[in-house]
Image (tube, rainbow, N blue to C red; front, side, top):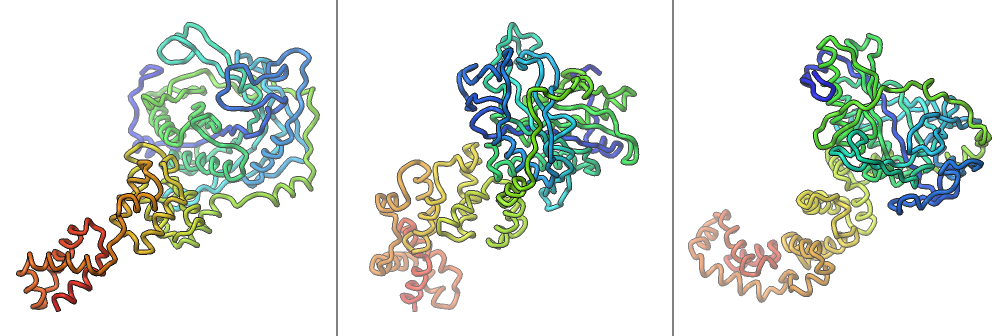
Length: 501
């Protein structure tokens, strides 16, 4: 068994013999205009090393000043996580040496975080509520970004040289640290995923971050250890760093459970270390031996005064908090009268905001769900894009449904119109007009089509006259074909019965 290749224990077998304990550290990049301790602008995708100041570069004599907006955002997050907000807290220097940390220390919070002792109730896919205890949420600055050039892995080992971009250095972060998450059992991967996803939704609801994991706005470090029984002492943990998708969080937990079980089964000890998640191979590999807090030699930051948010300000922020995602989902489900399974499908598909906007624009919740979870969800899956990336708006869906509700088009025609809308051919109204797709409502053309179909199928007419109504579908189908699907099937049936009667 090597450091990178192990004979994994089957996940179910590992769970049968070991109890997993999680710990999750989530970093959220705050959406402030400037950095945590200086006036350098924050903008994603800028040219390397163009968003810096002497402070973010760690130049001698440069003094930091705390970003008040970042403090407010941190308090918002703490309150949303049911935390106590410190009456006074301070920053500390976390000392370590790496090229992306120009000062050779990171300004963070250690023993005095701004928020502490909270919890978050997480809803799993089957509706089960799992409570995650929050130890702390503290403010800090981000490091820069190293790019390792050459080699096959993109990591420092085997690289020819490295480049450092300090644009990210000093961007405000809040780090949220859980207490040991016990009792998840076989659902540990699902709990980890749901917890980070719930946090992401809260960040967006609070408007403190874009919270886009693919951009690194939200990054999760997943700690995991195994022990023989829930009553046993905690095992040695590993920390899988910077996992940047919900799916990968779930898969990383499953892999570490199976890997650590194999290590323990071989009579070896799990090493306390950081590990890297590899998206392409779905495995973790060893990074470095994990440092404990004392290794960072924390001491109070002498260039910053303590942060002491007044109780009046904290309560003002609390009063201004928006509706939290879980409460919003419950309210909307009640208003829309969706079943539990229907609502879970909507949330999992990322359709909640789209359906809410569609209902607000003027259609029923049932119709909004029909389009977004039906034709549009299938199209998004086929195109391998998110629902909100499709070239159609809630207002466009409402316009389409309004044409159906008015009787100008039927559902079959509406699907044709939708395809044309997605192809960029215009609005629903423009497409219906240009292609002449409006339902035939004049009885004259319908009667002519009915007479032709009846004349062509006298045997079916006789059966209907004899009381056998089954074959009437063939008559209606023939009329719909003759009118290119533009007839009202209900009206066709009425006219057929009048003709035969």
